[in-house]
Length: 84
Image (cartoon, rainbow, N blue to C red; front, side):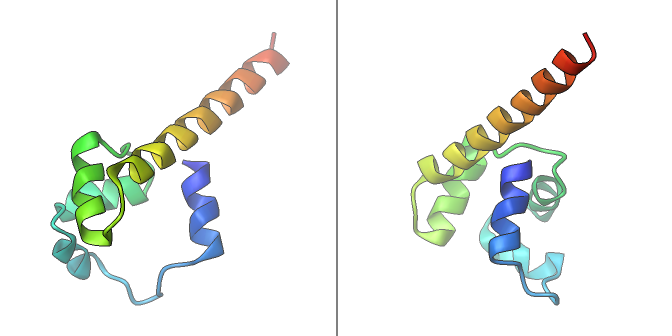
């Protein structure tokens, strides 16, 4: 989830953003919280819901997830190479 952290660092969320306003996204609060906390990936269904809210493409959200997955995989491979 490092790429998401990088995006958040470029444009941090407001300090007072609580889970309650996230319910207005049309996505369950628990799902949003677990994605933000890096414990869940963005699914195709979530990508569609987020795209509707933010008026962009589901591909944007899926590509963001793919970028995070690739980054995480590269870190794991680099770590494994150092220990072998």
